[in-house]
Image 1 (cartoon, helix red, strand yellow):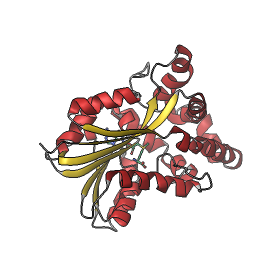
Image 2: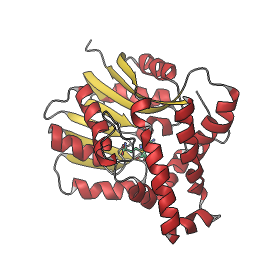
Image 3: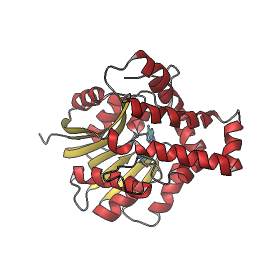
Image 4: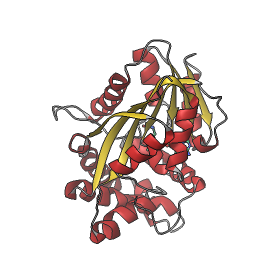
Length: 283
Ligand SMILES: C[S@@+](CC[C@H](N)C(=O)[O-])C[C@H]1O[C@@H](n2cnc3c(N)ncnc32)[C@H](O)[C@@H]1O
């Protein structure tokens, strides 16, 4: 696993999403995750929804299932799942700003509940959920084993988990770690970035049976070309963006540079993106 040279705490993660709230929403939208392209002709909004649909299909969700969305962002995934799969969703985010946005969605749907809460300190009873989904949130957790242990505990026997994760390729070279992966973790507030092997091991150690782990890097990396382009246009046209970058007190402004590192890291294959599917055995 890639570990940043400065430890990243849950408070750092929350501050990242609180500080960059407006930028995330203006540059990319309410889905704070990659898009998934199959034909290459999809708009970014269509690609973002395609990523959720792909996960929902992999879970074979049934109407009335109770899903936990770990690291739910603005609640857009939960809303999509409730509307398109008739499931109820409980979402957690560590960001107070995201939780406020998500609460507005919950006010319009009895199927949605959102909590401003750390997954690693959750108080759900054992067996509370039929499915657990985590879209790009496990990377932000200091203890990945605990992340999976909690998913296992809170799932009913036979329950399923689907995790989209930013991944470091196995057996990285020193230059990739130094110029790409370590800074991406530090600047992007990831306490650690695991490889596919790491994720398999954590899931298995918790008791899960891994059903599949798909490398989707080639289908998602276009996200960063689009984000970098949009961010550059915002810089040229909106003084708010230039002001934030010039503000020496804005600790998370470094993420503008991270965008470029991530784009390069996908190009070199240093970084990967995967969907892990697993289930909790019935017995
Ligand atoms: C990249 S965003 C993804 C958001 C959402 N899943 C989506 O796809 O739009 C990462 C999310 O993980 C959440 N997160 C990170 N660490 C967390 C923790 N320990 N407990 C709960 N949520 C966490 C953040 O608050 C944020 O909502």
